[in-house]
Image 1 (tube, one colour):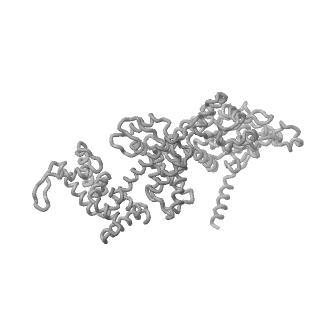
Image 2 (cartoon, helix red, strand yellow; image 1 turned 90 degrees about the vertical axis):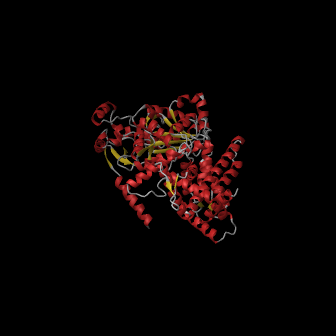
Length: 631
């Protein structure tokens, strides 16, 4: 019964938010909280900003899109700062339809859904409260009751601009129900709801021959004409079209560019003048954010048609490309899996990363810059450090490929192939090789991929496989080195002693003979080379280590194995190289001896406890790495 108690509690909370009063009482609320009079565009901007904004690497990150949109920080910043922000300030951009344009499964629909769900929640807060004339099917702004000749005085007193005219229905109601006394008109607080068609509308094109314009603007109720005597009587009209119901909030046009022309022309007046024509009435005012989404091919076809020039000038196109960061692509797959019935399946670590590497490679343009290949570009885009390149190089790469991310493999394809791999495999566990195999097989069934792209994508699967091979070896390396942790610490201390002597230009003393000797250059280089420290860079690296050692000593801390990330990596790689023969024997022997079996069990336990594998995937990893080392 706990769920029913929560339902009751939610209902009680909603009832507490309800408000009803006269227009005179409403003006007191406006005086106290001017935000209740903000436009739809200002409301959506306040909603996004109010959720929180952080800055990272000179880029704004909006928490509103938080755990739903990944890797589109640049596109979202542009959307908020170039459209919503100026539109909220009543600049001319608000008189434009917002068109999200991008490839399939790129996040366009998710952005629109987030805005709609956000509007619903925001209208239940004090900051996002919305009030409307009670009984109005269009949830009309009560401030429309203020006569045109008094609006300048209202602005002087309240600091609020009023736009739009009172609708024909409410004009009649003001005279018939309230005897012209606007101060007595009843006002109520409303809550946006897509399901209840309050402040949020959605329009989807259907067969142009059968779809009625009434779906957008409402229609005459012929059953009431006998009662009211005329089709031009507003009481004989149903103000229930999507444009009517979306007033004060937002209107989503799905596949807008597929709409018949007669539907599109209604948007010209609505976007430019803030009103539209319905029935035999004067223009009806509406304040709503119009959002549409489409793909690039349909958009190009649309703008090539001369008939659409007038509407084209009233559209602001916001490109929504695919994500181009491997780490963010992994999060997309994790979210899609979490939302499915596949959560019981064990997906081995790095399986999704291997798929993400393949996906991102298909979306990237091959770089023109000398000395950089597509893999390095992928790593730079993901924030990894690549020797010889920096953030300026990333910006240069982005400038040379401005349309990047508008093509390539979409996340849904990857999830479909992962699903195929799961269904096929009897054991409820899949690894990176299963995923890459499924992706490869799927390319042959992908009808929309050209032979040229198929060949290119097959190469990217091979690259993803090589990247995974390195990851797999590092994973086993860490687990094995942990089993030899004492050896790793001894090796590190030996290296530090030699570095200290080298930097201070001192001699080393042999612990057994007491003989003085030079620092062991061969040992130091054998470790440094593991992480790509060149001969020219060795002195700087060693001095950096010595500085870190001194800093720890001053603070009374001990320099541990994990105190320097790159040194730890170098020690691990060096030890693993030295242990390679042991690893080969341990992972590939069909009948390991007792010592080797113990080592295998230690490594498997480590992979399970510390790295997220299960017994099956850990053993598969060991066998695979063993085969790699034995090649």
